[in-house]
Image 1 (tube, rainbow, N blue to C red):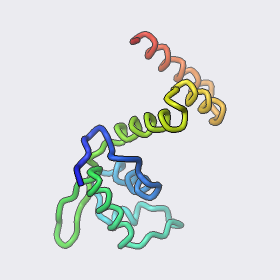
Image 2 (image 1 turned 90 degrees about the horizontal axis):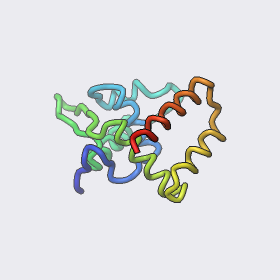
Image 3 (image 1 turned 30 degrees about the horizontal axis):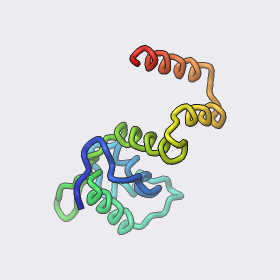
Amino acid sequence: MSKSSQNEAPRPLTPVELELMQIVWRHDEVSVADVLEALPPERKLAYTSVSTVLRILEQKGVLRSRKVGRGHLYSAVLPREAYELQSVRHLVETVFDGTPSALVERLVEAVPLSPEEVEQIRKLLAKKGSRS
């Protein structure tokens, strides 16, 4: 399987893959035990399940590993920001028919926004508009 570039995941991550990637992104390197410890107490995943998912993520090219003793330490190849960008692009293309304004419309309808967040969004849009 080919490795992905640093700016693009091969395809969207599954919910479990994303859950584990969130943990990896918060740390420089993690072992399977580190990931298990970082999971919420109510999230019961077996050591072998976590190990399997981390190996799958490595095969997808979003993680790399290095052997340490009998185990491995995993680190992110794909930065969180790059995955966020890829995910938003995918969402706009597949759900919103390639129309970013439709995504923004649903966002402001669906998510409570504080006045500060609305102002921040205005500033981001004004900045984007001045670069066009």
